[in-house]
Length: 264
Image (tube, rainbow, N blue to C red):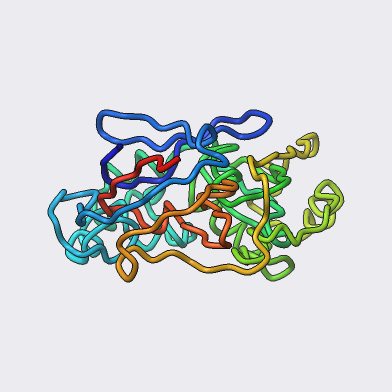
């Protein structure tokens, strides 16, 4: 039996992708649990910032932490709001400079449809794996988060910026020529970003460890169903997929302390 607070699974680029659930004193290689019946039990909450047993509000944080700490500021989800390049503070300028003033990638990924997204360069290909993308390609590499943000805003007028998680998990996806998409969208890049275009970037294909895709989806909510058992049939994005069509979003349940055990 393993017990700890949920954070998003660590991933390793391989064929198929390797997944690890990290607790304070343990790692679980989740790939090794495929085709095994596992039990998940909710124990309590633990805010990822203050570590108190307080209901989680968003992103693994309790409500008070969410509205105070820089890790949950608006520019996290909306990079175009970044201001560290102007030396302007939002919540914590030192933290904001550390995160915002580093190379960022604007990319195209195909998880449920072709979408545009932003990530720090050192999060490639982790970000794509977390989104359940079968294929992805870098479009531009810019020196800060703000430039990545305004690029995303410009491109999402011409391509999606959201993943349909149901389509992604059912694997109802068609292959796309992301090179063609990239070249087609180049003309819509903001003028100050044109010089950062990556003409020679190539498409990366990702293979997820899924034995059986679900046909209907039932999302597991541990607050409503604190104990669950099921046979693990796949892992995609940050989701565990079970034989009875139940899916569990590990990242969406960050900040919950759980027991995980192998039943058989």
